[in-house]
Image 1 (tube, helix red, strand yellow):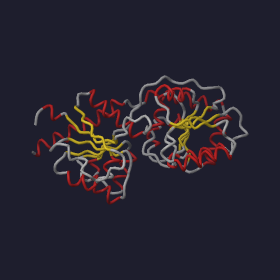
Image 2: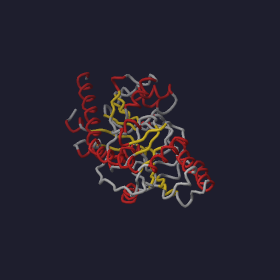
Image 3: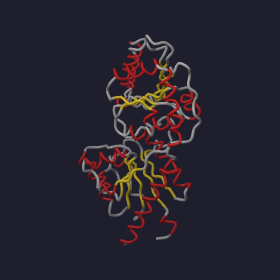
Image 4: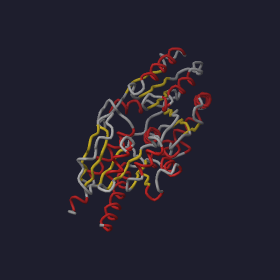
Length: 344
């Protein structure tokens, strides 16, 4: 094998990876991995897979013995193909979350040389469900880009929630809580995220906003990127993450990278993303009453807001860079190349 081939990897990803209308944590992660590997000298060859494509030989164009990184959302759709190709390719699965029926997922995951997860929580889930061998699962947490710390408003009334608007993100729980807080003055809530992924949920959320008389205080912006997203973070006093499920919680890390305190449900990998407990407030999942209580406490105490803001600014020093994420993945690739070179 040539030195050039030894530093090549085929990356199988959804064809929406760069689609500005399909922003997601998984796509952002994949973008950083692709670009970071290329910057560190890897020849990354992208294989784009359209939505809805089933097991129709997605990997047929990948040459024999190639190192192949496969996004977990695609891997879950083609377990039979992964098993069939496992003797031909050196496969690594990037598991953003636990997906697919257990037996189907086990078949796909055990066909890989390694599994890369984005959180310790996801790793633990895979192992506890007997979907993977512990020694084959590597954690590469998402990184964060450096950002300027924000300036808090005197009232602390600017709430921000970022994520695809859907049931698992729990925006309906936030609206139920805010519906009980109309007696509190000077707060607004901006909900940023795709409105296309779960249209029925969005319709019901919109009706709930009207029903609770929050239309003048709550905004559904849709997807924001670039300077518009930075402005949304820059104008936030508190980032609220009411998720029902979350494999990591990139929004939590993004908030802390900007020195913004966080109010989040204690679910999945969110505690890992909250690098400083002092910078956040955690509540049980599926609990709008707890959201309401904690928000009242937040607004009632300027001293508490100052403490949380100070801790959030300090937490910026604990932020993981994307270069560290990429270094872990590259090291995993090197291990596989070394192992297979010996076995050959």
